[in-house]
Image 1 (cartoon, helix red, strand yellow):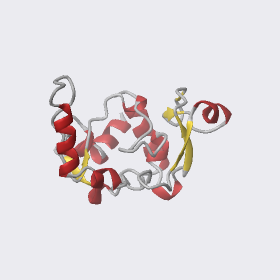
Image 2 (spheres, helix red, strand yellow):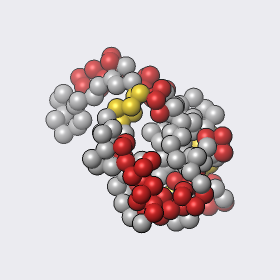
Image 3 (cartoon, rainbow, N blue to C red):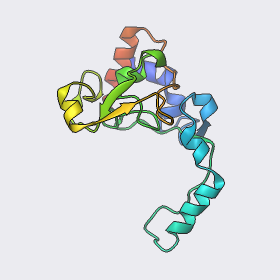
Length: 167
């Protein structure tokens, strides 16, 4: 399968279960993604959340400040849209486009799957009716970064996306 080979060459180091960077924090400066969330998550903020969670053992209690974002495995990635840590990219097709070509405004929250773009329908009357307007020019909403794969030829992008649908 051509898509699997493309994944192995371009994505596996960060997103395969056995990838050397999978599960590791990558600095926002390396990923190029919006740094606001990493910047606001200071050691003091993490401690405040940990203190709040102490009386509730079923809640998360190991918050920490990392300065970046965890590179995760891509199991069921076809169903986890919108993409990037802040949900600023509506589909896998859009994620593989250079940031300047990604949608600047779209609607999040309409839960009808778009099998062609691999994400949820994010434009049109129904998306506008059931979703909320997401603008990437607002602080913390940037869809920049994660440029890996954006330089692939169109046929390789399609093969990669077809493979990602199998994960």
